[in-house]
Length: 68
Image (cartoon, rainbow, N blue to C red; front, top):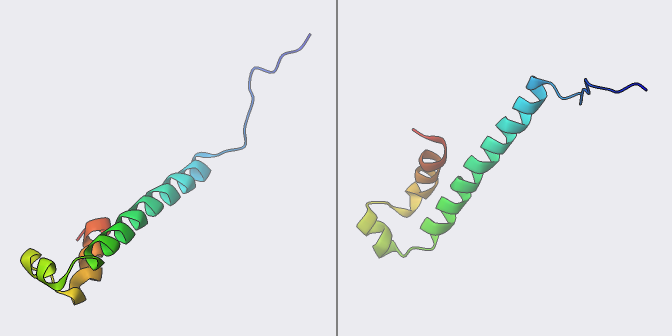
């Protein structure tokens, strides 16, 4: 009786790297969207207390998610 000891799935390291990269990009995008949503809900006074103007929300979210 024959047994298959070496089963190949067809996934290469580059293919799995693609999914790791995709998962990383999705996680960063979730941080970006969460930051925008949270800052957008704050009043102008609360944003001023943080030293952020409403026009800076997008740039703050980009820095929070993707770095400087």
